[in-house]
Length: 196
Image (cartoon, rainbow, N blue to C red; front, top):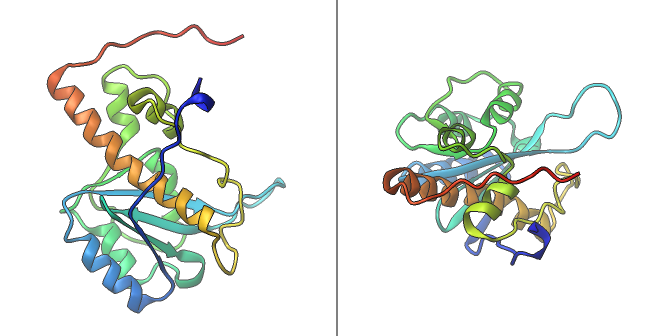
């Protein structure tokens, strides 16, 4: 059971990006890396009707995660440069939704993105949530407690920052493990009975 597994969280540096000058420095660093993990967060809407706009873009290397406060800086020129980059692979999960939300902020040509769900389907994995994938591959648990918090708050809490950074960073970990398994064939699929 997932709740019984040890919890994993990002242990690197977390940097909140609040303006274009900071975004420019962050993007220059990120585009010097060989691989990035990416995710977004949106303030939840508990009523029917229009959805809120994406509020946070988190992009992680192995040891630094940048949290771009999109609700404050929007789709700035440097963030657009990051999203349009075709050299550095940006790994995410269910990227169609993230990219759709980002395109709602402004137009950009989609660069090099790799969706983990495409890769896990290729080897026959059916559980496609980040939490279940990480539990299955690493026997560790990603906490989802902060998911439905206010991502447009004036100041993000430390728990929100850690949650956001962990989601982006674990995408890198999962991708690299998937690549290793695809190359070695060192895995065995187990079909679980659905819980009733």
